[in-house]
Length: 471
Image (cartoon, rainbow, N blue to C red; front, side, top):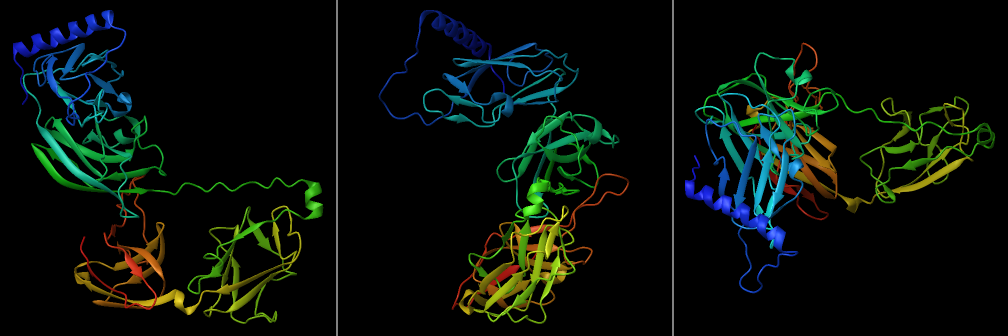
């Protein structure tokens, strides 16, 4: 607990008066030049009421520091717990900060004012990190503490843009209707900490850092613990997994084609998903249009060789999940040329617009040197339920392998770097499943763990890696 003497208060008063006099008598304050560079941040020298004071109901708080300060985005950094209805007025001047509180403070309550990284010195910009001022309207300071970490369930990554909130247990609807009494931010490692909490039973949640701090949209990232936590002194190592209960709908551009444009037919455009200028032999070819399309029964798209001979075994379909996308699946061979012939009237949109003309997409598949094999040695999979190794690029799952033995032989992979993830596929359906909190059924998302070391597949190289699987 931090204490200050009467002498400290006199020093603060003198500093404040000195600041006012200097403002009245000087147009500019020029710091002395020369000497070693100041590498230390400012520090608290006194406060009124004193830091960690008890039995106080301040309307105004004055905090003094060891040197002249400036503040950056102070309202964005500021967290007051418990939360107040009205945002306090914050005035930073020279070496002091004045906080004016408009709310009536609760009795027997510990209040903490966290400034985050908003305070720094004027000359060198040294940041006073995570500075917190504390006082109590009762006879003692509460000492409850909670620590934990938040991970995005689907990717295994962390995102520091979220907040962790507390609501009293027994009020299950509070997260939908009320702003929380307590909330805190995540640091760059996805970690959080609550200090100075009163004893009690709380539900804990994770939400985006918006002004409501409520769960009012299932497309928001969200996390919860299955049971309430009891705050006595310290709760360590809480782990929460954030998920989207529903994906945000993809807005499809409406067709703006006029009747004149319809007659000329020059409206349909598409993009091809080649890897560079070549087709990957392990994935289908996709043609993506600007709007949903459908096939014409009279004209068919054909996959052909270089002599325009139709190849048997090719599957050409419209993706049911993405009605603007055509999927061309085939047992591609390496370093082979193909032609995709698209008749002018083979594809139409909802207004029956067609291509400008018959189109031929000529392409070649990647050479054999663009691929190689890989061996992954695995330990600890026996203790896990339905483990799956996922290889991802740009947060997209490229390959998935259920793990049933200690050695995974992958005969062919495109050369490149992959992030390695472990999916605990609880329902054994081969894919990640999100959680749910709306309604009666509350379900945690399936967990994905991101391994720190990527898998780098190189040509003409023995690619091998060892993994230890655990939760």
